[in-house]
Image (cartoon, rainbow, N blue to C red):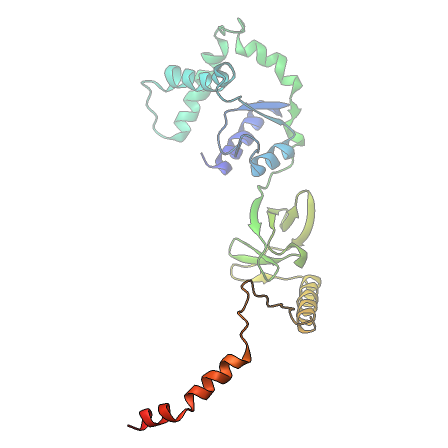
Length: 259
């Protein structure tokens, strides 16, 4: 399941129950947890927006993991088995009928209570869904060398100190919002595909940074180098070379060369 689909399923569930729970338990799927030490930043942003805590199953602990998978097994064996559906709307209608008249009114083996009765107790604990603001998922982008980020075939400027770093881009309320962590570093109006939105202060800061770097490189001192020899050079007396020269000029060598 892709992350946008998972987020949409959550929003539909919150709307159906009329509220948001304090915590939700998940399997260790990549949409929720990237590694054993890191949650998915995009899903973490969604959880923070809605106000619920992410809890994941401890690896290799069937007692916790089974709580997540058992509901899927029950859905598969009790509802989906031997049923046919004409379309998605028919599946949803049959599923809602099955929940109300079968799943929620049975006596649960663990709690020894009906889910419908427990739901009456739990619903008041939910944070009101009506207070939940519309959610716009954030996408991660890397700032290029021209201090811009690409989003939906358009480019948007950011302050040049973020060049080479990853930022989050959010399309919400008719704006393109660019953040690093929880800090907004730039806001733009949406651009047409193939166009760029560049704020003058970003361009001015980029030119200043570029010129400062160029001037510093132009006036920087030449590199200092030092040549060292690890092997000692043999030292010979000049008399050796004088003797070789004398032998080369002797009459016998001259006559031999002429013949």
